[in-house]
Image (tube, rainbow, N blue to C red; front, side):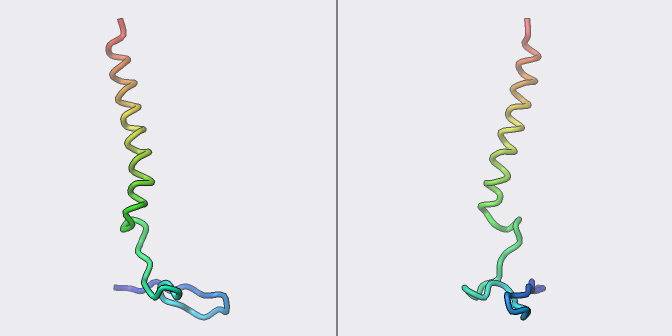
Length: 59
């Protein structure tokens, strides 16, 4: 596993989170990001489906 390194304020290279001592996970492994992206995406899909359904049943 490759460690992510970044420079801190003084310019030293630091691995992970220096405050808590844990490595930060990539964004796609964070459960909250799936909610932030998934819920609006599902609303868009449902809206498109509703428009298609309504346009097919026009008198």
